[in-house]
Length: 291
Image 1 (cartoon, rainbow, N blue to C red):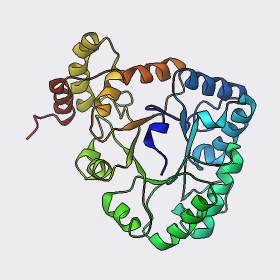
Image 2: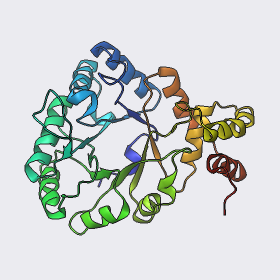
Image 3: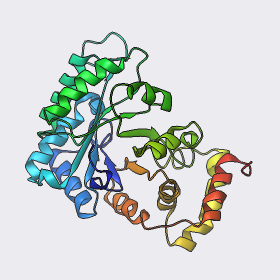
Image 4: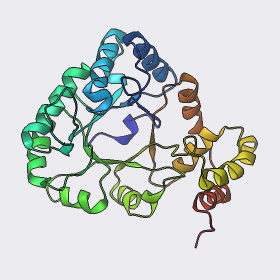
């Protein structure tokens, strides 16, 4: 298993870099990639489905043109989701975790990303039909051939991971975790990562704070406002600092494509929220004091 310390503490999520968001040109992707590295963000998170199965190939072209030393950066990607999309002959959205498909998907990611290996290869979402021995056959082959360095999952609960680990070790789990969506603290997901020393990754780490105007986000805004001046930070940074304080050592996957916000995200790793401030924000999220 690859050492967790080889990944940057903030991970750049690429979902909105392509057709599902900014639709950056190759040059713009190269520029943003270089900016990330300058700020200390060296880990890039992908999934085959992003941009309707197109973003990783665009990123790969940008990476190739950048001439960045591959050994200085890390690529994470995911497979398994079969979308109904013009690029695939699918009749219904489903999951495919056959041995053949997992291997094919990893090899497609290698080709698209213009790389010889993936640092971390994840199953994107659990399937009711997945079988640990079938998955193990595929992942073991990829590991033995050096095409992937580590294997993990995304959006799996502890029992699903335990089922997989009857056949193969799971080195990380990428789950939804934020101040507004903090169920991972209570459903055993973060406990499992901490107990088993898995790499804990959080997608949508800012949650719904900037997307929704709800009683919850209003309570959080009221509580977070005085903390901004106290910590010389903005709300984005304090929301990240909140999840970074969790003992499972969360790696936030930050989805912004803004250079300024990426820089601010790395600065957030230096904020150490005081214990009571952490619970003030939790109370604001829940709408009541902790039991």
